[in-house]
Every structure is written in C-alpha cells, then in structure tokens.
Amino acid sequence: METISVDARILTALRGSNRGVSGASLSRELGLTRAAVWARIEEMRKLGYDIEASPHHGYKLLRCPPVLYADDMMSRLVGNKVIGREIKVYRETSSTNDIVDRIAGTGGKEGLVVFADKQHAGRGRMGRTWVSPPGKGLWFSLLLRPELRTSAATQITIAAAASLARAIHSTTGLQVDIKWPNDLLAKDKKLAGILTEIHADIDLISYMVVGIGINLNLGTEDIPESLKQKVTSIALETGEKVDPMDIACSCLQELDRDYQRVCSGLFPEISQEWERQCKTLGRMVSVQAGSRKIEGRAESLDSEGALMVRTEFGLIERVTGGDVQLLKG
Ligand code: BTN
Image 1 (cartoon, rainbow, N blue to C red):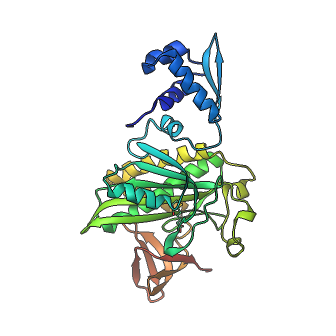
Image 2: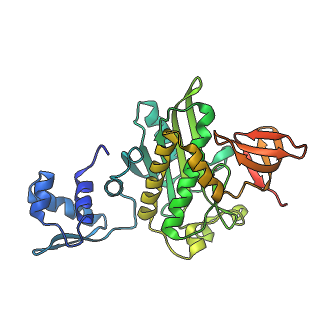
Image 3: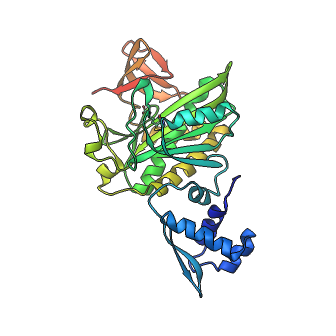
C-alpha cells in the first residue's frame, strides 16, 4: 500500500488491539506529538467513529460509522497488493467510471478505486441508466492495467463477478448466482452489475476501468416501476441493512486476490469456481450481440472467458459480449 495516512495508521493500530492503545505508543509509532494524535482522534470522532479514551487503556475503537471513509478502508486493506492502493470517496459525481477514466488518461496508477455515494449519470451496459441514489449502494470503479490482450479482457470481468459473489456471500450469507459475464443475481433478480471499459494500444490493454454497482439498501420505492420484477438489493433479500464498509472491504480484498490470480495466469482456476456459481451454463440462452441474435445452450467458458453456445444446428458459437437472456428449457 502506498499513501497510508495518519488516520489509516491510527485505525490500524486500534484494530490491532482489543485492550486499547496508549497515546504515548501511538505518538511514538506515528512520529507525532500526543496532542497531534488527540487532534486526529477528535476529527475521526466527528466522522462518527466511537473511540473511547481512558487513562488506563488509552484509545479503544468501539464502533465505526456506516459510511465509506477512504482512510479506514485502506487501514483494513493492508494485505492487498494492487487494488485499493489509493482510494477516493466522492459525495456525488456523474459516474465513477468517468472519474477513473480521466485519472487513467493522465497517468493514474493501477489499483486506484473511486467510490461515490451518489451518481447522477450512473450507467450500465448497453447504454442503460444505472440508478445510484445516496446511501443505497456501492457505486465504485477500479483502474487496472493488466498485461493482457484485449481479447482476454473478459477474464477480468469474469474474475470480478466471481470475487463479488464470494464477498457478498461471505458478508451477508446471501446465495448469489452469476449470469455471464457480469450480472450477479439473487433469486433471478439483479443484485449487482459490472461495466468494464477498455482502452487499448493496438491489441494490448492499456488500461481498464471496471465499474461495479451493488444494490445494498435499495427499498422497493427506490426501484423504478419497470424494473421491480428484475432488480433487487441485499437488504430486500435478507431483510437487514448492510454496512457499506464491511462489504466494500470484503469486495476489494476478493477483487485483489482474483486480480493477482488472473495476472499470474491462473484464470482457469477462477473459471472453475465461476462455473460452480454460474446460472448460465447448461441453460438455453438468447444472446443479442450487436445486430446478431444467437440462441442455444450455453455449454462452457473458453480460456479467455468467452461463452461457448451450442446452437440448434449443433454448431458452437463463441460469444465475447452482448446481452444474455436465460430462456426456459
Ligand atoms: C450493468 O450491469 O449494466 C453494469 C452496471 C455498472 C454500474 C456501476 S456503478 C459504478 C460505475 N459507474 C457507472 O456509471 N457504472 C458503474
């Protein structure tokens, strides 16, 4: 991790001790005066961190607020190698993909993650709008610079879907299914989506912006009438509100782990895990790929993450993108 701030270091130290950490040892570790440590603790309290100060035990972290705080996330992601090296949290933006794209274009480093509490122009695949109201979901984008051919970019989307499914399941207990390549479903309704945008130099990826939207606390009133049968949220499925920090950190840990695996050539391992959670394989599908419509049984993934569909004539079609609909039968 690169830019670890004072707050992140204080939070790391407090998390590392159940008994509390003395002001003297924090000031020694951080190279700050005790007054400066106190001032940072006061600032964090204003953000909603419940930090107890006692003469015997020093400072003790009792509770964290249910909001995203970049420094705190970085303090919880010290084991990550790439994703989350730098984290920015915006109150509102057009689309986090746009912010990351702009930073990438001016030499931004891979691993940057940008979150926004609200997006006023959030977008999904196929030019769709992505509803992103404040306090209701995780809307964020990653900047990646994998050394991959553009044809292998689907590996990243597949890996991201597998990571998110694991993170959501482990933090909420919810059973999450994947629909190729980038939809996460709960009981056949959409819970999360991934919008991957690629910039390439000839055939090599220069950078990728992986935009992720996870519906955490959307209520039925937040979902447009036309989408009510198709969209859900973790809170609607589990009946419980979700702490955005817990799930964000878990997602970034899992994404980092799988990104390392893709970069080390271990995509086949991920693809096997993905297949176990995938709703698409074995099903009859209809894929709209540009102006082409392909119908058939989804059989497998190939080594680059493309979907292999056997059509009614017994031919195998290789699908690298498009909108997949699960058909009955
Ligand atoms: C889809 O399923 O169509 C993809 C949805 C992706 C939504 C996320 S929210 C964060 C990022 N910013 C955007 O404008 N879109 C992605």
